Image (tube, rainbow, N blue to C red; front, side, top):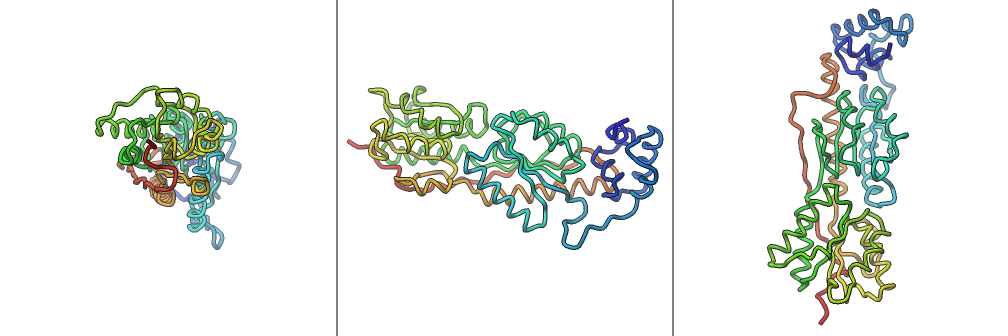
Length: 360
């Protein structure tokens, strides 16, 4: 007999049952009675003699520790090779520390392939107090199962295709891309390429849409041969030049959907006999710190990393408070009766040395 079956029999979440039986959660008397009855009826062996009786006592956290019920918060990121994810993780960790919330970081891999380490973490809802999820997969079923089991979750950066009642925090990728492309047009560029991320991601789709609309509104026609999709890596950026330097069709400017890809382009430009910005103007996206140390310095759409982290942590604390209220009331399970909030933050164009008017 499993703890999940006990929870189902009692009409509460697995997390509620587990934490109650371990003496880590106070619930309403009627909820406690239902869990105790389920343990007895199903002969659940996980509850040792006297454990249920002890679990009804109040548990007081040690001096200086997080409040009861907070638990450990996990931040899931795709990788640490992209400095944007590293910087965002640092901001979230600093905020969590200032609020005395223990935080761990899990790396899911770009396509969620690191299943062995991630699934036990997400599945361990009796251990986790909440989850901040930044993934490169729009259909992560592990996330759906965690939300259904009552784990407080906030999704940031990339939107997902699952119908989940969770708060989301994103940036205005469309507006930022429109602004960046319009800036290149204002500088006199007419053949503007777009080096984009993986085509299935929401960030990629919105940035591409902003790029195309900016061209169309300026009376320019997008050349499909000047749009390249690939992973957010330096290697992909360096590999784009053979496609962008064909005689008679070369662009004079490029909007790049990620700074780390733009770093690869700037590093490989000289190998292809291209001067930046004299031959090719480059605008990136993310605002990673290394961009200001490149030569020339990278013009970029700067992500509001501090605001992203603050909005995510605030939203997660609200979600955890909702779960605590539900568990105290004995309802358990996924949050109900609230409208998920969608926060959209602006991108800021930072003008540096990698853009110039096209040469004669």
